[in-house]
Image 1 (cartoon, rainbow, N blue to C red):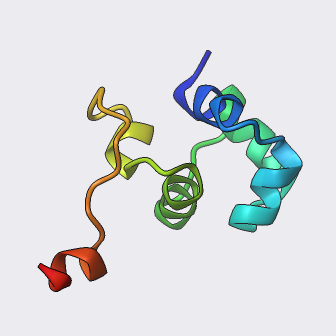
Image 2 (tube, rainbow, N blue to C red; image 1 turned 180 degrees about the horizontal axis):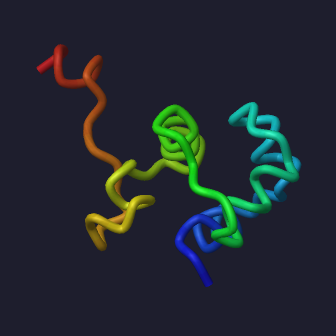
Image 3 (cartoon, one colour; image 1 turned 90 degrees about the vertical axis):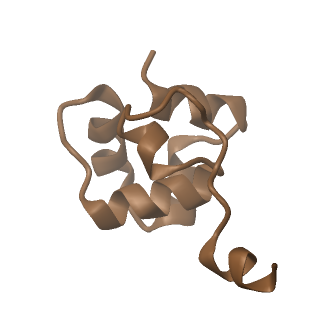
Length: 77
């Protein structure tokens, strides 16, 4: 199972819920999960925010699913 699907299922989200959270059409989202379509940079950002992970994790660049601190969070420190 791919990372995108595993994260979605772990949070109890349906593909329709992901459509509502990200604005990515459900049929397009399904293709992203199956790997028959690649996501754009903007789609990756939306997915990472909706799933509480990092874009690097979705892209397979890290095995750590934890999100990075956001820019607005870093400015507070």
